[in-house]
Amino acid sequence: MTAAEPHPFTPEDEALLRGLARAVVDRGLAVPASLMLEGAVPMNFVLSQALAFFSPVVKIVYNSWQIDRFQELLEKRDAIPYILRAINELEEARRG
Image (tube, rainbow, N blue to C red):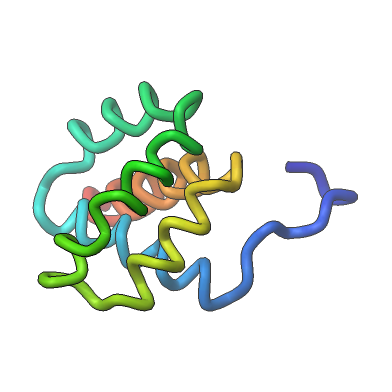
């Protein structure tokens, strides 16, 4: 993203995506999650549709609006790279 491009996420979206990244780092899963996400970048739309399919089951455990919003965010090409950057930043900060 260059300075001329508009920012694709609202502050609420950023908080949701960074919260996901923080949960990954807090559980010590930064490396496996990064590997999985790197492979998933070309399939972000397919992943969003899979989440839509499984959302009735996932919503039993997680907040409904967060799942719906995350599914919408996955349809944007910038979502997975944003999560990867957030995971890397948080992991670097954790390591000191």
